[in-house]
Image 1 (cartoon, one colour):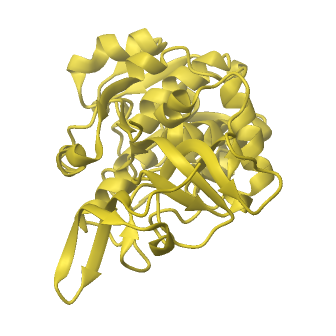
Image 2 (image 1 turned 180 degrees about the vertical axis):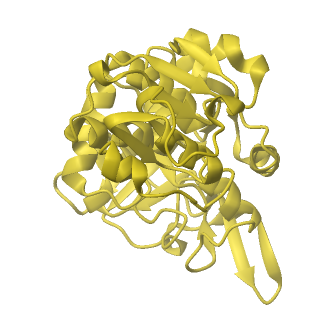
Length: 332
């Protein structure tokens, strides 16, 4: 397949003229180098994308760059023999829209080191409804179960449950056999979260506490909020439970004591999806296409847009109005 001389891409600039982003026509040679060229089919919108696209967060390490930390499509050319024309592949994180051009483009050029063959049992569309959000949720669960998290320790709590990571975590963790309690500041979303598999939907104040250690309500959980919410989740976690931290939607700070760690043996696990090693990536995607595959992807995908709608999506997300996952369609 021949790559056209110019194609559309959502590009971000940060120079003497100011911070700006929008759709441009660019050539393949304008993209960061890589062994695998793909015709993109889908991408997605993550909180990090909204920060990068608006300049509200210092995400880009260099500019200009094409935005989008997720991408999936079909190979059109490759200098790595492991990838052939027509292969369905995906990439998440790995420097996309940070140090190299990302997925908001009709064509993308990727390093083969971070290009993952689409796993059996998953479509390209499903892979990008999952994207970094689903990968992060599954990576958190992998870290937890590797540290001996079991359903017998008690229900798992997910904070920020209506967001992309939170919604997918409710579904993925339920598929893995855990009882899920969803914590959200959007009480109107209770029916949505229950439909994804949550056993209970709790308001934010369900975790409020001023104590360094409180009643053990949960076997562990996944926090996407940070700040007081994370500290409270640690205080309410049962002995030898695990709390994974994957976001800072409310605050990057953590004011807590060591008491949950040294008295109950609670573990705080960091989840950094962008720099995950290749072998772990492959294992996470294998599980996401198999026994951990969410049962409600079409429900979690609450919006599907083209590139032109990205600025509106970014603003909504940064204003706290995001709900589920937004898929970006890049095909014809």
